Image (tube, rainbow, N blue to C red; front, side, top):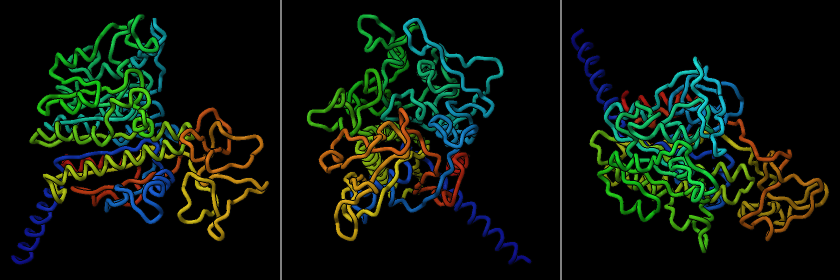
Length: 468
């Protein structure tokens, strides 16, 4: 009896020790917006070939994730990201609110911008805590960075609660410590914020506002951030020079998202791209700042423009942004291992919020460029459709580029930066897909990520990894 009791006690002790060892001090959550399985495979082939591996492919734990929202088979980014962050299924367009919240469009302000928040209707849902807020409450540092506007659906789901994703001026106000509309669950504020869309943070000025954008309430939220001790940055140089012992906000685009990676790195760079950091550079800078907190941190990193290129049926930009996102995963892994070689204290999760309608065509030969016309594996000759015309390996289920009469395609045309893949159903813009997405994980608590999971379950596993 005594031996049995001793054995049980030792087993419990070892189990408790194992659980403690598995709790993550730090979590980095990577979200490739719209990065469905076909996009991952095509990007792998595009960069490394059929037998190569993306950095995310090398993470030892994998799962399939169901992404449907509370009211739709095919989700939009707001409720799918919010499900990861809160564990709650909500309606399309709703951000980090209860399931009964009705998506209510914002109204136009005096300048024609969506500056009027119509979410205050009595009984229209309640806020639900995000993993970022829970981490903040435990004394951890927190950050949210993206290649989209900072007020876009994915980053907003980490620090904001609102009935409609399009109320971006109100979302911006929720992030400013102590200001009108502030989300008090953020306590003294999100420690690191990066993205684009400065117009949502600056006052409207008829003489200088870019594209007549800006806040109708006259507030300069960036000045308000600075007054609360934040370093405010507008360029890559600003970011690199910023101290690591202060809170930080970097907005690298005046009126919209950051440039596509293909355009940011072009010669010469397009638009504001010359002064914008890569997602990998943003990630490592955020880690430098957040790691100053001895309690650990939570960091969300979004490769948001993958989704935008897919909506535009521009596979080349989608794949290039996916590679940039994957490079950020590697940068985070390398940096984390400098101080945590076995990732005993760090959990890294990589996933997507939803799929798209990108698909593979035909029986292309191995080594054929993934963006090229399809060439048969038997003879290497161009594959032909039933009418005798060539076609590309990558196509979309729907979108704007559906020809009434197909004609031959050539390599020079389809490999060009601005080529738009053909689609099956003609729509003004390609839609999301409703299929499962992939999840990759490594480090502390990663063993729990396996099988087929609902996106809400990921929230539970993140909390468990922290020991919350």
